[in-house]
Length: 164
Length: 367
Image (cartoon, rainbow over all chains, first blue to last red; front, top):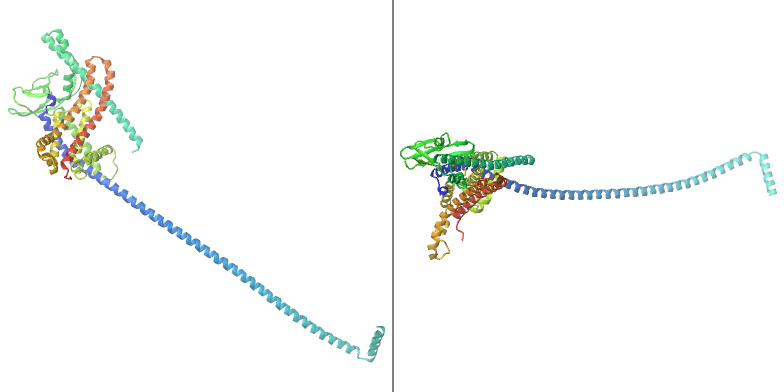
């Protein structure tokens, strides 16, 4: 029975001490603890949300960058290809032009050479004819200056004629 | 903190805990031995004076476990730690008594003992069965700092030092991860908040009751555990303490009662009118039954734990066989560990039930 009879003194002290304990703990312990726990949770929540949005933004940015890079690369490839084609075409054209020009030149030179040759040959022929005529005239003149020589020649020719 | 050092610390504290409990078993053993010794001695003395029959002597010299156990779970006016032979390690505590004729008197409880450790009257007061009575039969109002009150104050100081220290750390760097003792209590505080308060009171109102619930929870838990320490007082196993806790719970619940709460008590909706004649008295009794059950539950659980432990140890003295200690000591060690769990569970249940009562009181109409 004594066990379940509450002591008046202990009731008094329990009320007093528990009351003071509650007051002090509520003011100096639970208030900052609960408050900062809530704050910390909130800040962690916010940080997580922020990191998620940042991650999404980063992914978006990365995708955009990749697209940009891909298009730039495609453009570059196109440009290079175009340039190469143009240069190839230019080189081919130049080669062709050079070839035709060269062959034309050669043909022209050949034609001119032929003409030169022909005219030269004609001139030489003409010269040779004149020269030989002059020579023959000169020879005839010199040989037929005196009488004796003319006679002798006639005789020789006669001899030749006779012989032939 | 690196995990390795943490584990090392844990390991170290486990060893301390183990030692504490083995010591607790032994200290109880030592106490019992001393008490048994004392009683035989006292009886031997009394018999030599009274020259009683030998049969009576043998019977009365017998170890009385019931008396011993009740003495151990009851309050005392001095804090007795252990007795070795004739040396009594006792901390005398201040007695504060009020009588109508003498007014308030403060004196040491050591005055009630003479040099032979026998109880003597002092200044018109006698100490009988741990209670102070006036020799002239006057009513005595006893506000003494008894063993339980001293233990109550020790636990209050312990709680203040620990939790104000933790609170300071939260105030200084609220966004930092907890460390040290803070990281030990933070999960428990969050447990009380999320599992007990939020679940039972509801998101809207729970914050108001957090200081009260946390104080109750840690007060009960700490004192339950302090009661398990060798030489500790059986504070939460004392009906006066649980009575005050229950009364506070009663007021907290009913002062926060909303209209829904009171209509459920006085005019339960959806029930035939004539049924209210039966229901309303039942509900009114229920208001008082709830805190009453809180009071009895905590008191009975903690006291029962102490009784079991003391009974186990008493077995050795009942059978007068030291070899029994080989079985009893490990078993009481096991019971001690169970009591550690009970210490937490009872704190949890008390807080849990109070918050369900508060939850019912602050609930708003939503039919």
